Length: 194
Image 1: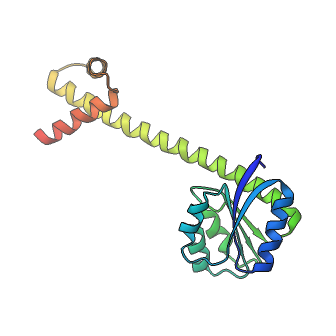
Image 2: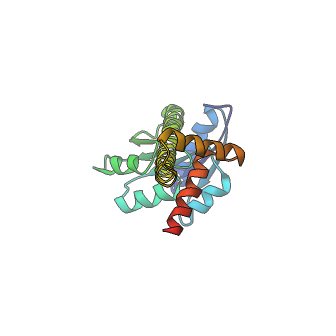
Image 3: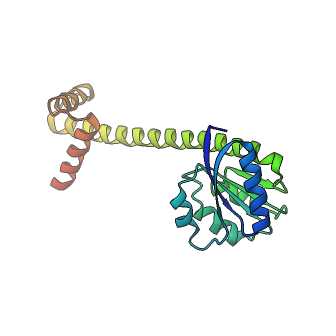
């Protein structure tokens, strides 16, 4: 666990909430906020800006699980969910919604710290993968636009593909812009003129 963590615990049972807070305090430098009423959960969590959210549910229904998952912002921060029973099929739904750790019958003081460490590590890996996927998609889209712009230049000026790219690149350098931005402007202008 990193030096200082801010943790939001979503727990309606006050006694269990105290047990979780005690376990967290024993595990290191942790600032803990407990939310007992889940109405307006997203706003309440955002107010604290936690490093991780721990949700403890006795018997979740699919609707309750989805609501809690969405409200806790699993794509913004790690979320560890503790449930009392297996509740068939809900683990898959929780993980698909972005929950970093789904623990059945696991809310025991000695297991909280390893679960938090795992949830944070898993969240960081998934965030890195999402970032790389977004960059790859952006690069592919830019490649398509550049190819379309090269095609337009080849047709309009009767030049080769290499010459069309060289012209795009020279224009981009002269205007202190990216090749993809110049290509996008050319494709947009061509669309307006056709």
